Image (tube, rainbow, N blue to C red; front, side, top):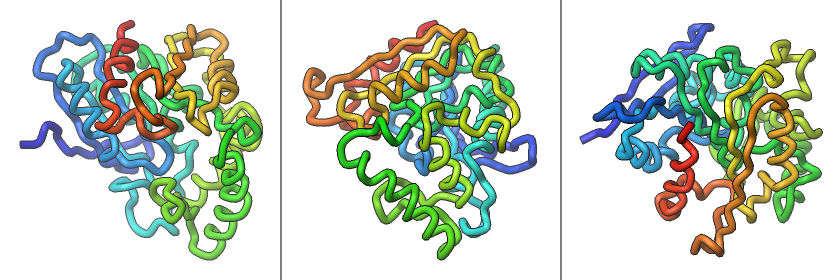
Length: 285
């Protein structure tokens, strides 16, 4: 028996996003949860976590960003999707869909990596009660660590331009970095991470609405000490973009919590379910 309902979210530009809605059996929780995925990661990745949250009494919606997973319509080389579209069109539509389904006043966003980094360009940010940014950071290349610090410049400056030219998309699947990416997503990802500030690097160039200073909802960032992307410096760089929001940074040490590693991806894995109650505690407003 499915614990969720498959549905389509219609965006302002009529683009349709594939989504999974987990209705709450009771309405003890004031706000439903919207799970916004990481770059190139599909909603299926978050199913176990979404199901667990649902069992705690939360209505939950997860979805695929345009150009990714079931939200890719046609050939990836023909996709015009961008990360800016994700923040300006996809997340707003997902927020409105979840509110319509639950009749709630606001949603809580649990955003993984990129999914927790785009509220500053989301026009209906007033409908968000809180953000939990899991492995959320600006991903600034110079503040990466470990092998990712060596591989990221190769991916951004060699793999993405070459694969976009030859194949028409950003090739990431072959290096284990999730789904292949529409070329504009790959291009913007490289651009956003080239300097501190992430998406603010293109304000006034390709993005013309900036809500970072207007956001006043609480933002809690979670990152593991062994995360090579969401390093302490990059998490703090993200939080500084919201000068009028109360922010909090929770660092998780894998060894202290009984794990060999957590890194950038494992917080949502069933193997790391002991972390879920730590995340869930921060859902309280």
